[in-house]
Image (cartoon, rainbow, N blue to C red; front, top):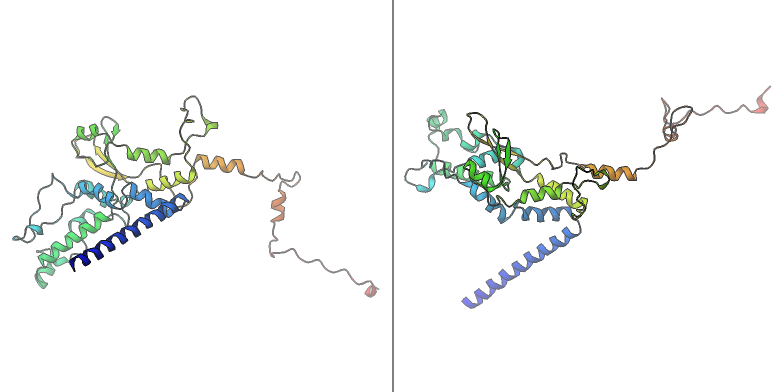
Length: 321
């Protein structure tokens, strides 16, 4: 009986793996045929916007070794300690551009989740009238809210150090060690720079000058693929560690790449405008006497009616005296 159960379990597991592999193959085929949804899914999995890689990129931000250990909510239970929001995670959660769903939350919301009732505060009027809130429910609510928030955040690929006094900016491992902060798993691999390179249009050959380097040996990136990478930049936040010029504490800030599309619709760059200008039909020449082109004269409407007024019929010769 055990052998039969083991055989059925193995067969079911193998069947599920085959179905999952077939689903992935269909997505790859759709992406190769320029399906936008399938191509975006592959980019999201490859750059940690979803899947296991997202968890690996967010893992260092879920803890803060420098923060003090919070006290227990239930004195006798060790696991009742509330979650700790690191400074990097707080910057991501309070910024709308780094969240996949909803807007950024406030600092007070992280300290006291909105799902907790007012009587969760021991000194509140509700706690005095209705009694104290359950400590077990408070612990579960805080951890459930913590998991819900970090799962809606998009992980950055690297930490950029912006040194305001020296006017320098870098994301190398030496820059991270110089200011004494921790990096991310992809720190120093130049993955984000590669995405920006694929999203940036190449200089047009007709507009190259001596000051602009020649990129003719670089591979040509189709416009359709470049737009997919531009949309990917809207889903990759830039986490910047700013070192102030005066005696102020350093802070983290979140922004997006300047190479991202700035509008939700079609965003034409320099190469797109030149492509449209080459294929645009010649403009209609205006009439020399009136200054109005032939197409404009055809589109002229009468002020009160949609069609010109009908002329009066000619009088009948028989009735003319």
